[in-house]
Length: 235
Image (tube, rainbow, N blue to C red):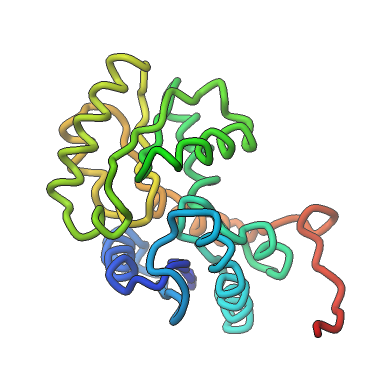
C-alpha cells in the first residue's frame, strides 16, 4: 500500500515532523511519502493562505494519482482544496479536519479543537456547522501561538494546551481534545497522558483512515458531488 501525504504549506520543519510521526504509526507494509509545495506560504493561518495553496494541492494530488498511490492525506486542519482534489482524483483524498471531526464524535460527547489565534474561532465554528457536528462542539482552545511557534517549541505549546484543555474539561464538558493544526503532529500522547481524556492528532487519525479505505478499495462516489470535471481549455 502506498499513501501520499501533502503538507500544503511550504515549511520543511512541519513536513519533517509529520513524516516522523507517521513513520512511527504506519503499517509495516505501507509505503509513506510526505511532501510539501516548493512555493507558497510557510504556514496557513488565513483564508488568503488557504486560497494560495489550493493550486499546489491540486497539482500534487494529480501527481499522486499518476504515480500509482492508493490514497492521499491532506495535512492541514482547514482542508484547503479538499473538494476540488476529490473531483480530479480516482483515489481517496482524506482531509485531516473532516476525518477527525467524525472520529471525535464517536469517542466522546463533546470535543474541543485547538487553534492558533482568536481570529480562527469563526472558521472552526463554521466548519463544525458545515459538517453537522454542532451538537458535539464544546469550545475552541486558542493557544495564541503561530503554527511555526507551535512547531518550534513543543514544551511551551504542550503546557499552554494543557492549561486550556483543563479549563474546557471543567467548564465546557470537553471529552475529546483535537490538536487542530498539522504543526501539532506528535504531541497527542504526552497531552493525553496528562489530561486523562481523549486527545486526537488529526494527521495520525486521517492517515489511519486512509489506510483503511485503501484496504477496503473504497474511494469517493463520482455520481454528483465529486464528479470528474469535463476537460476544457484554460486560458
